[in-house]
Image 1: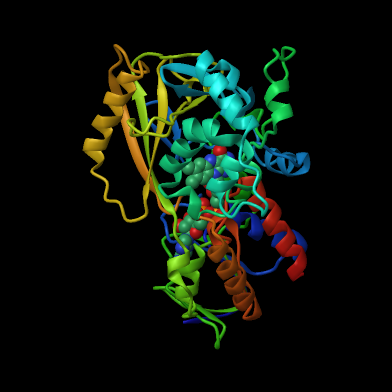
Image 2 (image 1 turned 180 degrees about the vertical axis):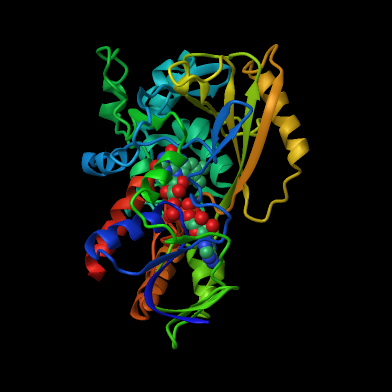
Amino acid sequence: MTEGGTTVVIGAGVSGLSFANWWRERHPGASVLVLEAESEPGGYCRTVVQDGFVWDYSGHFFHFKDPAIEAWLRARMPGQEVRTVQKRSTIRYAGRDIDFPFQKHIHQLPHDEFLECLVELYFRPAGDAPPRSFGEMLYRRLGKGITDKFLRPYNEKLYATDLDRLDVDAMGRFFPHADIADIIANMRPRPSGAGDGGYNATFTYPAGGAVQYIHALLHDLPAGTVSCDEPVTAIDLAARAVITPRRRIAFDRVVSSAPLPALARLCAVAHDLAVFSSNKVLVFNLGFDKKGPRDVHWMYFPDRGLVFYRVGWYDNILAPAAGAPDRMSLYVEIGAPHDAVFDVDALRQRVLDDLRREAIVTNHQLVAHHHVVLDPAYVHITQASLAETARLKALLADHGVHSVGRYGGWTYCSIEDNLIETRALAQQLS
Ligand SMILES: Cc1cc2nc3c(=O)[nH]c(=O)nc-3n(C[C@H](O)[C@H](O)[C@H](O)COP(=O)(O)OP(=O)(O)OC[C@H]3O[C@@H](n4cnc5c(N)ncnc54)[C@H](O)[C@@H]3O)c2cc1C
C-alpha cells in the first residue's frame, strides 16, 4: 500500500515530537506521521514506575534557558507538579566530598593537593597554537593537577575513550570553563544563595518523571499521529518514499531523529562509519528500603577503581512533597565502549559493593531494581565526525531528508536544544 505525500518524522523522542508540534502550529491540518520503532514514545526521555519508585532512563533534569519554551511545555502538563531545585552536586575525591565543578573548588582539597593544583594551574603550558584536542585543552587551560585528579579520569570513565581523540569543543556549553581569576575568586565563601555559576545552578523536575515532557509534546497531536512498533527500514531517496514493515509512504519531507549513521544506512548513502564512535551507558535504577545521604542530588566519581562515574538520588529531589516513599532511590551510571558486553547481574553486584565501599549503602536492603542500556549515549565529537556530520546532513537535506536531534546531529545537547533546533527547522522549511 502506498500513501499520499506527507511529512514523515522518524522517532517519537523529544526531537521528533517537537518537530511534529512546530510543523502543525505553522501548517494546521497538515499531514504529519511520526514513526517510532519502539512500542512507546519518548526515546531517552522515558520514565519507569516500579514498586513505588519513579525512575528515568538515567538522571534527566532540566535547565531551560528560554522561559517561553518552558512555559509552552508547562501549559501542556496540567496538574503536574514541577519542582525547581537548587542543585547540590559533589565529587567524591579520595574519601572527601568536593563541590562541583572541581576546578572551582580546589581549595576544598587536602592542603598539599590544593597547592599542587594551584601551582600547576599557574604554570600551565601556554603553547603557541590553539589546543588540538579536548585533553590538550584541559592541560592548557587548567593545568596538570586539576586535569589528572578529576577531569581526565572522570571524563575517560564517562566517554570510555582517550580524551586526546576528542575535539576541543566536545562538550560545548556543558563544560564548566573557569580561568584563574574565577578559581581564586571562588575560594572566598559566596553570599548564601549564590550558585556556582554553572549552566545548571538550579534545575526543574516533574513529580511524574521526565516522561511528563513527552506527554506535553503529545498533548496537541491528533490521535494517530504517532505510530509505534513501526521502524523505518529503508528510505528510497529517488522515489521519495519511506519503507516500514507495514507500508510504503510517499513523502514531501522526512525529519529524522535516528542516529545519523543509521539514517545514512537507511538511505543507502555512502558514509564513513569509522568516524561515528560513541560510548554506551548502562544505567541501574536501584530502590532501597530506607533513606541514605540527604543533602546531595548527584555525585561524580573519578576513581578508576569504582565501576560507576555518577550516582544520583531521586529521593532527594522528589520527596516528600510528591509522595515519594521515605526510601533511597538511586540511578547509577556506568560508561563503556560501544562494543562492550555487559554481564548485568555481575555489574549490579559490583555496583552494590562499590556503593558500600563509599558508604552510600550501609544497612540498606535493595528492594527494587531496573536497568537500561543507552547506546549510543555520549557521542565522540571529533574533527572527523564534525566534518562527516555536516557533509551527510547537507547531502540528505538536498533530498528532502533532515537529520535532527542529539543523535541525528551527532552532538551533545539537552532536550531544550532539541526543541529549539526543531522549531528553527520548521520555520526554515515553511
Ligand atoms: C545519560 C544521559 C543523560 C541525559 N541527561 C539529560 C538531562 O539531564 N537533561 C536534558 O535536557 N537532557 C539530557 N540528556 C539528553 C536527552 O536525553 C536528549 O537530548 C533527548 O532525549 C534526545 O531526544 P531525541 O529525540 O533527539 O533522541 P532519542 O531520545 O534518541 O529519540 C530518537 C527516537 O527515534 C527512534 N528511532 C531510531 N531509529 C528509528 C527507525 N529506524 N525507525 C523509527 N524510529 C526510530 C528511537 O527508538 C527513539 O525513540 C541526557 C542524555 C543521556 C544519554
